[in-house]
Amino acid sequence: MFRFNLPFPVVLLGLAGWLPQAICVWLVIGGGPLGWSALAAGCFYAALILSFLGGLWWMAGLLGGVRSGGLYVIAVLPSLVAWATLLPWIAGWHWPGPSLVVLGLILLASPAVDVKLARAVTLPPDWLRLRMWMATGLGLLTLALAAVG
Image (cartoon, rainbow, N blue to C red; front, side, top):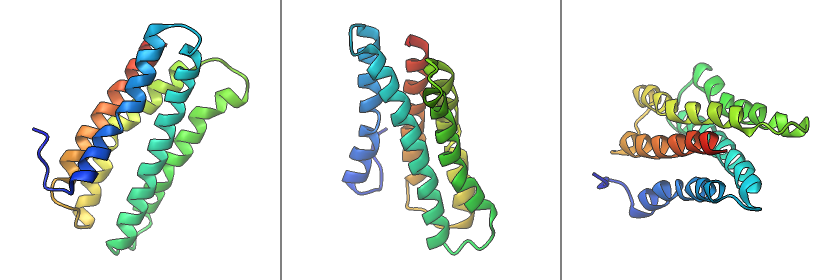
């Protein structure tokens, strides 16, 4: 189930990416003074990871010799979406729930880009399977955070 044909640190650190969000969910469920901070931290974490994914797609396309602009446009979108989900805080609104839902859903859908990318470039064996695990875990935890927040 969790055996991958990838370097152990890639798998370990990739799956450990669930931990910050799981801790945020736990802190919000527990209530108390850290609840709001954990909610905000979880939203920012999901936005950062989404932005990071766009950078991965950009570099994979570049290293794979992709010449068309479509992939690079798609690779820029995660940063723009992440930025947009954080704007409510800049406006002083207290509404992380909708932002968390958007981030969670996009994280869940993000492996679709990896599948499309795999048609254009050679990805490491088991990468798509690991991405599915990482995206599903973080996406569901982000949606859980929206639900408990």
